[in-house]
Length: 414
Image 1 (spheres, rainbow, N blue to C red):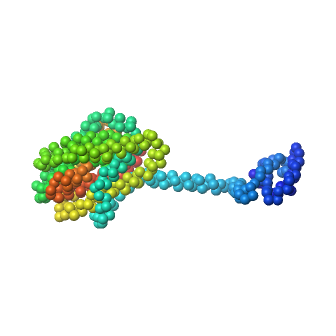
Image 2: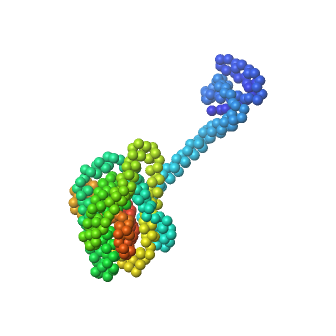
């Protein structure tokens, strides 16, 4: 479209119908004449009616030149505005996609936080035990905001899987803990409190990190994992003291009110908040969802590095290497037991592989932070707290390494 700007008093154009009247002088104003597209069959460019639009004295000229430049770029096949918008959208989409993929580097971040905690403990000592509950609660919030209430209703329709997960937590795992705790004392000649610490780790409930690991690998089964962990955590009030008395030979008192409060803070409340936010404010949920993976990775790194840094003196004790070996073998046995036991029970299920991964996480990952808190509060010998501190790191590293391996296998099979 051609744009012409001329003084009003000199405007006198010929039209098919009539001559435009001469306008009164206005030396400080101008008019914009936009000629309609030219007829290629016509020899005259002034035989079409002209549209006259007034321009303001200042901004109008600027706006006119912008329109003129835009028209020229369009005539040349260029559109700088559209190009910049497209580039911005592509960059925004790339950033969001990068944020979503932050979970893929979780095992590397966990390993890096472990090394950093060993080499420079002050990097994590600020993350004291009072931050553990809200940190784990945030991970549950991330799971909740990516789920809906129907997922949890479907989870209760699988009582067989829930029962198997419970047996994995409080039957298979305590037996493995008793075997490795006994081996620590009888075969490796470690102090009795070390063996008691390994057994204590096997007596506690499932770890909330297992729910997050399941969410990363098989999101559809995350509610099932949460139900199993919540059930084992709720009954830990009774089961953990009985198992401790049976395996360790010493009554272990548990703060019932504190346990219930922990369940509400770490599991129930954050997940409910995520579900409600997702249901009532979907736009807000969609806005913050891409940032959750990055924050969750940093959160997990702190949950792994802090217990190690806070108990660094015990970890680097003369028994540290042997304890590391025993704790690693204990968790490896638990992961494998959960995986193959589930495979034998649910071999004909359409989602048998997903169930195997879920039950493997549930059996192999324990609430080692709870075991560490119990060891510190109810046992006088500080050596009891060494296995739980090491277990926190080993469990996280092994669990999220499996997340990376199984996620890659799923992508290759698609």
